[in-house]
Amino acid sequence: MTPAGRFAPSPSADLHIGNLRTAILAWLFARSTGRRFLLRVEDLDDRTFPDVAERQIADLAAIGVTWDGDVEFQSAHARRYDAVVADMRARGLTFECFCSRRDILAAPRAPHAPQGAYPGTCRGLTDDERAQRRAAGRAPALRLRSEVTEFTVTDLLHGPYTGIVDDFVLRRGDGVTAYNLAVVVDDAASGVDQVVRGDDLLSSSPRQAYLASLLGHASPTYAHVPLVLGAGGKRLAKRDGAVSLAEIGVPRALERIAGSLGLRAGTVGDMLAEFDPARLPREPWVYRPT
Image (tube, rainbow, N blue to C red):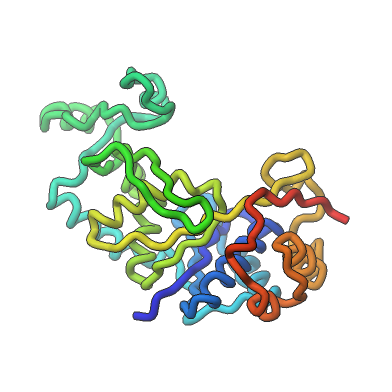
């Protein structure tokens, strides 16, 4: 299978110019290295909408981002995830967890353990204790029984990055496959070996790379690119003014994105001819509607 890069939006809201910029960067990284480029809609969450997915796909096509093969939808891959979970359970790599988010935040933890990291509450429950909690009406999530506390990945823009790996959720209590499992399984199944996305997701990469290693997959090449911020220095949002493609227009959006990357081209094809990862800005782009 020819290696691939990808863009994988969640259809919870229309793409804004920051999302479009990241999509273009993912496309440029993939095409400049001879990779296929895939589009995957991450629609497992109940806060995603088919009509939003349609608009996202249309916007990407409008700005010239092309992809190989059909658009992939995570909601079509339940059996794929079930098979991986069944294998992990058989290997003793998982355990049931009955904790709520509030339980986790309130639980005592080891000194210097990060806030929100799983404290291991349910890791050692006996069969009887699990049965009691189930009888009380709590549907368990399924967590990874991690054998490490941290893992190191190498990022093209950030260099070596070591992050925390805890017993993270693989399947939620409502039966929905968790993001960290789905993204690793789907990337491996599609031949994705290059992951370009916003640098707000850098901290999740050690968990995903560690899980990939447990499943027998190589860690992808990562490139976490700077976010686009609003005028107030916070993550871009509707309150920052015209941010969607419908509001900005295709020519102006491409012009602004190219300029933010230090490129002069007006189309993604022309951007590809100029593209050099080593010259990419390392600071966030503050977007101001003009």
